[in-house]
Length: 256
Image (cartoon, rainbow, N blue to C red; front, side, top):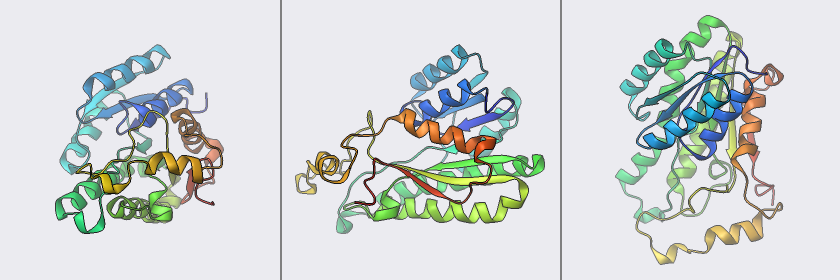
């Protein structure tokens, strides 16, 4: 029970990676706050799964791109389950768009969803962690910020921002007993293929599958449970001397 006595909040935890992390944390003894913006039915399913593992769980519907809703979410979580000391920022989007087709609105949507949300949540939840002198912050990003993915200028910039934010928080809060790390998944099972906003055929509809064949030594997509295992380790005392790091989990695609 690596996380016994802790309370975790995972944004975007109605499905896929977020839901897998919530259940992995529950198996290790943590009580869990589930967050969704609109997929309420999926969030409720994750809550049921956590409770079936014998842990407390609550669902909070909030848009984490809005700092006011983040603040309200923190207050509600403290009332209903307890003060959050493990935060996982799992929200993000990665639509494809050619550089010259990326409008201001599209750029801002990706930045707010994939980067601003993490900042708002860290700023809100860091204070009680500092008071406790213990905390874990894990940002789920991606390989786009490491390698710069074709047709993903906005996503690459946002994910590179996550890397910088992770390092800055690790530096600033390290003496408060708080770690902050970035987990960068590669192509995953049960997640939508990258698509363009306009579904333009010239954005290469076979791009995703070709990447798996040509650039992933493991020759398969990752599983959400594999991301959750790393996040469990980082949240526990076993990961207490790891901070400010980017940890790719991608079947080897980055080094090829």
